[in-house]
Image 1: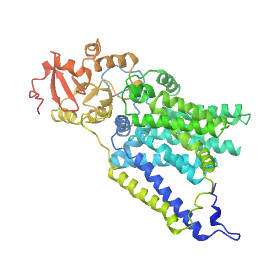
Image 2 (image 1 turned 90 degrees about the vertical axis):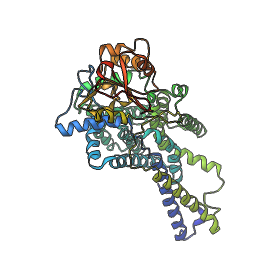
Image 3 (image 1 turned 180 degrees about the vertical axis):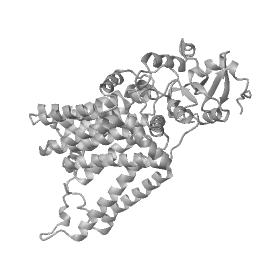
Image 4 (image 1 turned 90 degrees about the horizontal axis):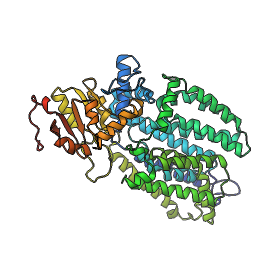
Length: 520
């Protein structure tokens, strides 16, 4: 849908070419600005712990030429079949990292992120929003791209396909042309193999079928597409066992994993509150806007309502609500803007100086956000080696401890903290194996996960893990509850430590190493 030109720029015969060029210039400048705003939000460089698990799987796949159906990386008992729902992500990312390094992975993230933003914008336009309100929608949702797009996770594919699904579903709903729904069936073959978030695509089809049935509009095409798309998910290396895993994964509690916390739990735990406040504020504005506009579209309202609920229940699901807001609400923002202003935009820009103001604002924004983006060194991947000194929750890596193990040619079984497991797998396999890592429910049983939590959080019975699954080394964060217990344990000796990590070995096995000094 094209943007209507202000009446000031129209004559009885034709529209002034000068004014046309001015509008195109403004569109171009503000388009570049919003791209830079989104790139800046996507420009995180601290590597996500899950990245190393993808790369480790991809390395095994490409270097050995076989598909690992059973876990290779843990020394503890694991599930009979390793149902790795992100396997294809690893197969795709490993060659990129091997050939191009960190810049290649970051480029993949930026491409997927901008494609997702573009699809959200196009959905808003398809629904009748003009250029400015669609851009305003993107501006409103970009802050939480910071948390949703840490480098480089399989969720990036899910966000892209979720946005694509909204675009296709809205096109079919508004036009009554159902053939495009075939795309949503076909993409499930790829989606279900890169990330378990493909359930979001099936959920959208179900919601559209339900919403259109309530609205007394054609609904059967959505359910037919849902049935066909569900069958496509069986095209995976695990068959029906994949769905058995999903049922377990969706229903299991994850009390120690921050991104699975609810908004209330995260607030109480002291998780950085800026994103939480923004999410709740945006949800409040969205509800008030819908009430003001007396919004009567049942199907989009169902999608917004369910994604809002999921975002309140789990932090990791908030991006779905943001994408829905960016797609559905700009048309309501436009209606509100028309109600607020008494004349079309740009009518007061009769003087040359008045026309220069928006150009100056756009150019200033481009310079600011371009500088902010480039100053983040966006093509790098960083591995912080110590906790954030401000106390803000974040990830850091035991880089020096890994180098210590390698330098001293130490190998064996490592009892490690949850967040470091996949980095250890990538860095030390096959000489070392781990006790726990971020693959979590895909590899480890519930009882083992419980025992590991009891150990790491220093709860009563923390020694049970050591007794049942004795390690050769223990690698923990010095801030962890178990660290003080290990320091006082007569059978364990710290052989390396720094501000970010502490490495222990059984006292009987340390004779070949120089005594550790905390000052070193």
